[in-house]
Image (cartoon, rainbow, N blue to C red):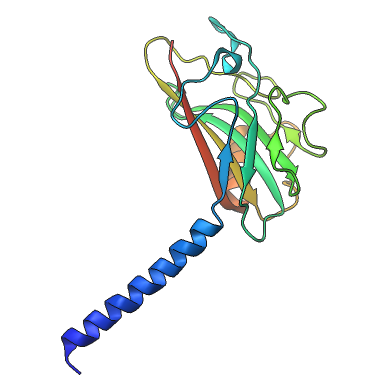
Length: 187
C-alpha cells in the first residue's frame, strides 16, 4: 500500500470517529436556559442589586437545565462576574447540593421555600446569603456568568460559612459538565 493511501484512510477513519463523537455530544448537550435573561442579553432591573448605588429588584433569575450527563448525582449553580475590579471577580450566587432530580430554579427562589429541598445557598461577595444582583462600577460593561454544574457527588461537604473560593474548589473538583448562560450589564 502506498503511504498516500494509508494517510487518506487514517484521515477518513479519524473524521468518522470525530463525527460520531460530535453526534453523541450533541445528543447529550448539557444546556441552561432562562425566562429571566438571554445569552448575551442585558440583565433586567429585577436582577440588579439594591444598594451600593444601584436600585434594582435584587431577585434571582429563573433557570432551567437539561441534558445532564450520566453519572450526575447533584447540581450546583453559580453566578460570577469576572470583570469586577477586585483581582478575583465577584461571586453573586452560589447554591450547592441541588438534588439530581431537579431541573429548574424559579425566579425569585433565592432565600425562599421555592429552593429545592436540600439545596444550600452560600454567602455572596456582598456578605449575605443568597443571590446578590449586578452592580458594577459606572461605565464598563460587565459579564454575569450563570453556570449549572453537574457534579459526581450527592452533596458537597462544606462548612456553613464556606468562602466562595472553597466552594469553587469543591465544585470544580467534582464537576462532570458545566452549562453556562452569560448576560451583561452596565450603568
